[in-house]
Amino acid sequence: MTENAGELTDSPESTTVVVIGAGPAGLTVANLLRHSGIDCIVLERRSREYVAQRHRAGIVETRAVRMFDSWGLADRVLGGTPYDGILELRVDGESHLVSDIDGSEGPRARLCPQQVLVQKLTAAYLDDGGDLRFEAADVSLHDLTGDRPTVRYRTADGTLRHITCAFVAGCDGDHGISRTAVPAGALTAYSEDHGIGWLTVLADAPPPAHPLLAVSPHGFAAHFPRGPQTSRYYLQCPPDDHPDAWPDTRIWDALRTRLADPALTAGPITDRETFRLRSLVHDPMQYGRLYLVGDAAHIVSPMGGKGMNLALHDADVFARAVRDSAQDHDDTALRSYSQRCLRRVWNDQEFSHWLTRTLHDAGDATDAGPFHRNLARARLDRLLTSPTAARAFAELMTGLDLAE
Image 1 (cartoon, rainbow, N blue to C red):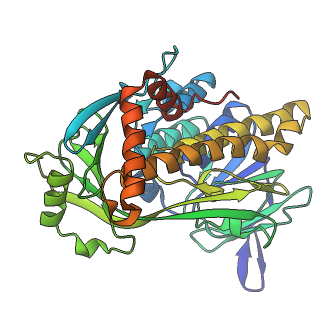
Image 2: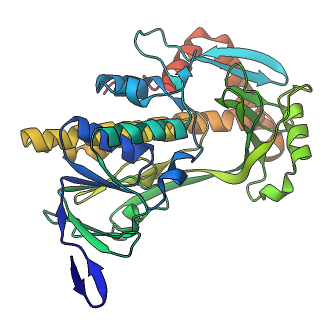
Image 3: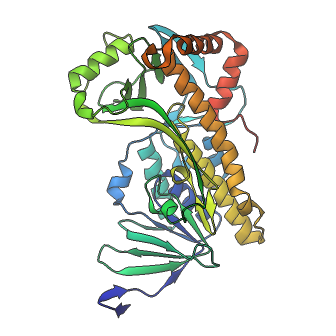
């Protein structure tokens, strides 16, 4: 360790890949690289406790389960329970069960909250001797277009460290430092504000028998399992609403009305927040030796549960490309990383947009107007009556609609 201009600086380190971010994307990249015998270092600005308890998506779709299974990691990193493939659509109080099962064989989707997946990915990586550094502050990326980029960060005791590497995996989300390290104009951003707000509520209340999406003139609502006695609820609201506008009584009254369930059991609300539904895609998903993975490259409206699953897909494509480069000196997959990932991204964006507009426009017609409400109702009717439409929906929900 040397002292320079009043600060402590460690001797430079070297690795093959530096992974920025220890969410599902970063930890999946790290585990797949470790499984391939490729060294990497993971940097996470938050504490391990914070990351492990971050509540997000709850279904690991069939495609992602099969991806982990192909690496021999499914049993180690996937918790939760198998998802039976049944989704309930409740339209004006009338229940319709739609199957996500597409008829193919193999592992099925899992009801696995993000914090469970993150905890298991963390444990698997550390058990295999992985290098995971929490509370890494002031992370910065340098020389991304050179042969050996440098990642700098500061430890909890204030020591400045430098890591040189062959590749950087930017897995730190939409507000992370990875994408901001790319010069202006190098990426094209495609964005969409859906003009819709959601109130999301986490409560200690009985989960539904099946994931539930409800359409009514009072607005969209949803009810998802997040554990044996935990539920996640969503309520359509004005895009700029504040959580304080939704006291407990208002939340439970709205849920009982929109879900058409006057006897819905309430429970202690442990978290509530509001957000705008938006979609965002950056093209390309790479700059020099920086590769953007997951939310750092794209945001998907939460309808359809594609966000986390797209991140897992990106991680798989990136890890295989690095493996080809490191073991076979073949950079073909690295060069086509963006093209391969963006094909899936835009496919899932389209499905999510279709489902978002259908379920919101079919309910309260204040914003959509009667013409678009009737179009959305026609789409719902086709989905619920046509076996062909139901099969297409199942393919899109499971993520098995595109051949790799």
